[in-house]
Structures are given as C-alpha cells and as structure tokens.
Length: 301
Image 1 (cartoon, helix red, strand yellow):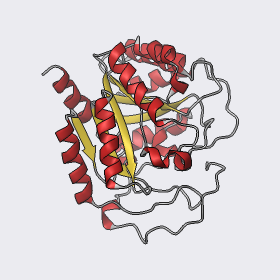
Image 2 (image 1 turned 180 degrees about the horizontal axis):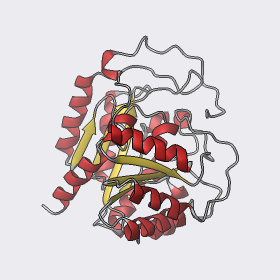
Image 3 (image 1 turned 135 degrees about the vertical axis):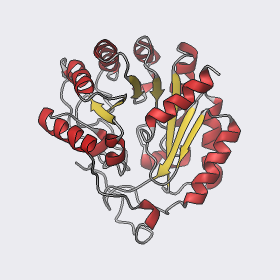
C-alpha cells in the first residue's frame, strides 16, 4: 500500500548496481515463517516495507513484527506503508504476536509499529503489553522494539521502558535538512530526545537508531547526524541505502557505494558507538541479534 504523496516523478540514477541485488528467499526457516504469517494474518514490516533482507533474516530465525494496524497517521515520503484512517488497537494483539514468537521458536524478535498519533499514548501501552507477554511465553527470546517518536510523550516512553525490553530503537531516518520533505510530521530534535531519555530512564536498555542514505544528503550532514546520535546516548547505529518503493515516493538521488558505507562505519566506531552496521542492504533489523550481542558485550565490558 502506497502513501498518498506526490513527489515526482523524478528520474532515479540509472539501474541498480550489482551490490544491491539479492538472492530469491529460500530455506526451511524462511518457508516456515512465511507460512505462519500467511496463516495467522500477521503484519510484518519485512513485507510491508519490501525489505531486501527478508529471506536472510527469516532463515536465521529473526523476524520483525508490526503492531497497531497496517496504516499510519503520517505521510513520510519514503515509506511504503499506507496512511488511511487507522483502526482501534486489537486488545488480543500482544497475545497473538507473543504466541507467534513462541511457536516460531524465534531467538530474537523485533517489534515495530505504524505511527499512531491518534492514540493518547501513541501506542505505548500496546508495546508494553507485548513485552510482558513475550517475557512470559518466550523468556529466552531477546526483545528489540523500534518505536515511533510518541510525539515526545516521555510518560509514554517510560511506560514502555518499565517493561525492560533488551533494545529500544528509534530511527532518525535522514538528516535534518531533508525532514520537511521526507518526514514532514516528525522533528529531528524530538527524535534525538527519545534516545536521550531512554538512556536516563533505563540505562540497562541498549539504544539504537538508523539512517537511510542516498536521499540527497551530503557526507558532512551524515557525519553530523552520527555525532548527534552519539551525543544523545545512542549505542548502536545502522546505515543503509534508501530504495524508493515507487516513482511517486521520495526519489533515490544516488547509490552510495560499499566503500562509502565502510568509511561511515569506521567514522561511527571512532565516535564510540558500541556497534555500527553499515552497508547498501542494511536495514534496522539486519543482523539484529548480532547487534544486540555486541551492544550487550560493551554494556557489561
């Protein structure tokens, strides 16, 4: 489902380079998780966001669930999730998702959500309930949350953190100059404060954020954003290539080379991040379990 936004059409920078080509999903774990999603009618950001790493992650026993419906209240121009009127949260959703995690025998579960500005707590209570359910039914599964900005509601954030997820992520997505076009309802400083307050309220919870590159940002802007993240307590950061879902979405201005991603990773490590995952195909949940292990090692090192 595509957002009702008009950006272009703007020509993309030629054919996708070889480094963005991925193998067709395969493997028994992939087929098992795929069947389960279809049978149970679960929302997965792996599908909704057309993630290129779906096959690899599912084969490794990591899946990303999307809660609070399948439509968002915002109109980010890079996103493939619809923004039609949203339904009321399903009170049974926490139990359903927790049951799926148990039955799929997942090692590491990532839970994200559409942005729900129509809810007083932005959906925080649903996140909190789900963490409780997962800890009861799958105590050995590590839990990573990728949350919206909750409109800066720190009481709502505290409600989530009280349940002690292992990782709390919130993505900057892009550099501040591009926010008016790419994230018109978001605020760069508000997003940074989500990470700052997480570190203050729950220092044992690992903080994480991510950036998409190739949207028109300059190198100096990326470096500045990485420094902002580190200054605000972010421990893990991901950087990946932005790929436009359709020609009506924010255009791909350029394809960032693997060497450039390696350079950003080196810079990020020099800033003191516990872990930097950078590469053309990297997404927020890519190698998520390995990122958690790296972050935990630094936390207790």
